[in-house]
Length: 86
Image (cartoon, rainbow, N blue to C red; front, side, top):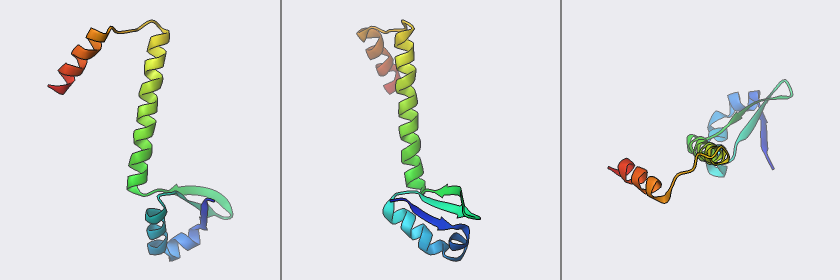
């Protein structure tokens, strides 16, 4: 179940909200005037989310390239991997 707090709660209880977002590793949703306004994530959760988004984008790019016939041989892939490791 998502955690939802008001902007007043965030302002008045920042330390508790910060502690909860780190303990749960889940976003906390903040309302303003009764409507959704922002979501708060810990830096660690944000970094993890961005890593997932980046990986997904790379997979989708690869699938698109494959659909367009941009395929690479096993040797080309291994050579590129070796060059990147150097």
